[in-house]
Length: 498
Image (cartoon, rainbow, N blue to C red; front, side, top):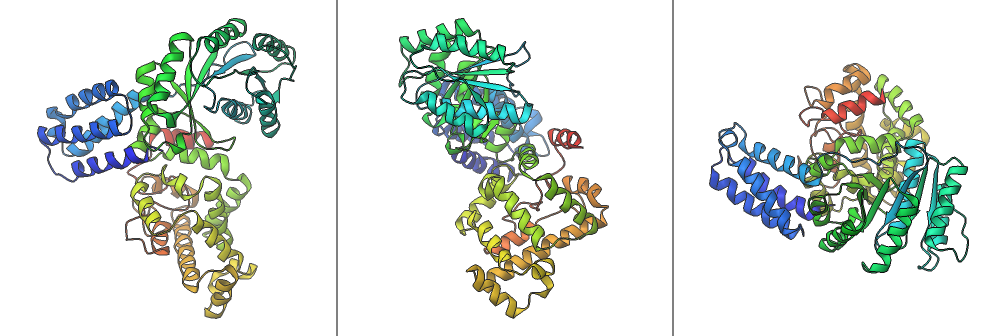
């Protein structure tokens, strides 16, 4: 997401950082480029004007221009302004009420409202242990109620039984009664949509809201529609008391104009972002993390959270025990590949890791994409259990057999072996540093931390990437390496995991 905008801004800030000193003309020229980049990203003109004026005023100050690192200071100012534009702080759902807490989903037809309803229900059940009931109030779109029922089965979330011929207000009353009688914590009402904003749509929503009295009214909009999404949000906000916005298809939004304009124009917080078609592909919208991704700083906290959700506890414990002994075989490397695939593959991880933007471009240019993980898994799968446990047994004859069995070349087998050797060396260093306690030093990027010579260096070698294409700290575990210290958010998250 935000790929085009991120690339444009990255080029501007690279030039700023490359200069030892900055004058006011340098800053104003850079801000003109940022302005063009935001407009090309389909950010609303009034929002761009306000943003640029604010950033320029701070960036041309004497404190910045006389700073030891003026380029970095400008980037920080832009980052802070972006965070403020996106909403400053993460806005959570208001569920602290006498149950059931009622969430009403509204939006135009085709925005992904029904699927988003199921995603939020699944997330509340899985992450917060809530007992959720979903009810479809859409009596206009063919099979809309059946669709929510199917999604309920897939997510193992209860749905209100369908009664043919009932009108939306009556369905809402029945859903509310069922939620109270059956002890549900949360009731989510999926209302009908239209192809455009009209009076009938608004009247129906207002009638349902009057009966249900929801704590949350969430507007679901498609981020790919850019300024149209902002206009829709503005129209709904003028007629219905919205509490938040959900942006769908954020993973396909290379520009990001809707996300950057929405909060400033509507005054409503963006609460969630849909980042894929799967029913767990939804994220709480965190302004500081999104700003980090836009500016190429990554989202290490989000990466660690995703890892904690996707990585099997048993596998992690086994690997931790091996790490303590300085052991790391081909089966362990295979487990790492599969965990990366679970977490979305190289492309998804690249957007969340600091400094990975250029690395991903180099990877794409060399054909090093998610198929690489599949190919490496196939190579390891062609080894015998004994070879996987003791890679030192892999002589020339065995390599030829493995290459033929996996449909790869001997050179590919050699590259995989080199990658394993780099990782095994890293594991031994962890042991020398005191086992898992030594990981703290790696997060700080200090002496002995995992650097470009570990998995990152091996990944560079896999497809002939230039040295330094992979960022410092591209190890087998999210969040490690030379990034200049641990963020406060990441520190809190790691302490919480303990």
